[in-house]
Image (cartoon, rainbow, N blue to C red):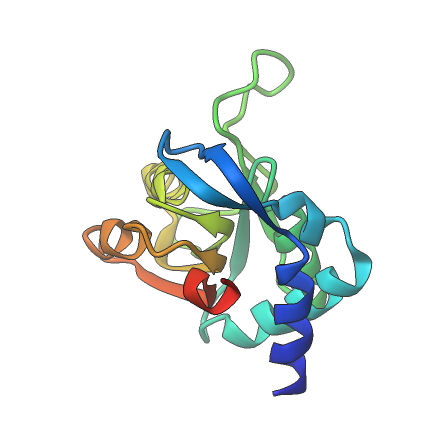
Length: 171
């Protein structure tokens, strides 16, 4: 209970009110600035501990989506002892030209970690990318669910959507 209260206090610092356009293209009168909570060491510690508790048994790897959820995957990796991979939004045009960085094998059970989800488009793309490469994805853990369709969109893919905090709790 104390942890949830500390987490809520840290996340509330990241809520901004005004006129915003979200990555989904939707307009909103509030914005959850993930970089506020993702750059605060105490908040990251709490998030890592809480995410580690939510990881389903049998998980072999965590996945963070470039750029926002990479710190979350890293801190959850440290807390859980599970390795993590990074899913790029698009292949890089140099070096290895990979869309997924880090080591994993086809058949690995991977949990995707997301920072803030509105429609879940980034998580959906990450799940599709990883599945194309043979990973088994049945869970996405998100820090803040804006409650605007992400859960339904992931459920349609057969993916369990596990939010830490719902927008109504923050607002």
